[in-house]
Amino acid sequence: MRYALLFGGVSFEHEISIVSAITVKDRLNEDKIFIFCDKDREFYLVSKDNMKSKYFSSFEYKKAPKLTLKNGGFYQKSMLKEKRVEFDILLNIIHGGDGEDGKIASMLDFFGVDYIGPRVEASVLSFNKLYTKLYAQSIGVNIVDYEILKKGAYKISLDYPVIIKPLRLGSSIGVSIVKSESELEYALDVAYEFDDEVLVEPFIEGVKEYNLAGAKGSDFIFSIIEEPKKEEFLDFDKKYLDFSRDERVSEANIDSFLEENLKLEFKKIYSNLFEGALIRCDFFVIDDNIYLNEINPIPGSLANYLFDDFTSTINELSKHLPKSRSIDIKYEYINSIQKAKGK
Image 1 (tube, rainbow, N blue to C red):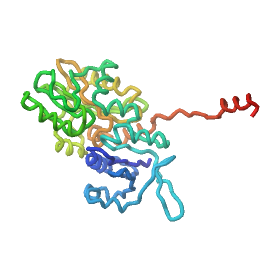
Image 2 (image 1 turned 135 degrees about the vertical axis):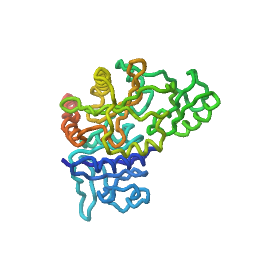
Image 3 (image 1 turned 180 degrees about the vertical axis):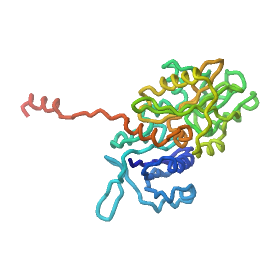
């Protein structure tokens, strides 16, 4: 099996995507090629030896061969003709905008490229935190209280402390914990720098949090359940390091009842919507009830550190990717009209 790792993209999480791809390079034990999407949305074929962060920050990548995405895959120009870049399955590792908002999924679907990652509908519902809340409610998954503020609004109805998040952003960028009204305006200004809408939620101190990743092959494949190290929240710098994790983490010390219920909630969320993707769900447990915190449709470094055998998980998922419905266009309707007109 030969995989193409697609990373970069135009988003505030561009650098995070580079870190993830470098990590997955060492954790996925299969033949791989590397396709980088830069800030101008140009595609480059990067050699394995150049998969180092400085190669991208120094713009050395611009010396790499350029690629064009068109019907059937990525193509590289040669002296006389174009040749297709050979791979079996593409891994979408573009975090944030482009990768998680549906743009890349749309292009890959349009050009008939087989890929692991969220499809368009899954991207839309998981990229926007409000849509995620509405989706969870529609399938019977608990969520914490929330309100949405639009840019220019500086009043909230929730009790303090609260957590402020840009509505369409991850990696804790623009996120603040607000413990009193005096801190609110500054925190909102920070969030509004990244999005015109923000999500406000209660900040629950000491809440139990559990992360579970998985995918659906012939059956569901689950990772271990992790209980993240407790801090108020992981800021951008800590998330940056978190995305480069490549060693298996310790399993949460929970009973089988909670484990099974976390998996049941994950199945509800994954359903058919996330078919073809490896996702991570972050849950809260409050008074023995499970609440969805976030859906990570392209988790950092594809959550490799949560799986006993990451390569087998990816290989199994690659065998069960959704296929587009084949539509046979025969122009029967137009031809029948023309025939009726005697033309």
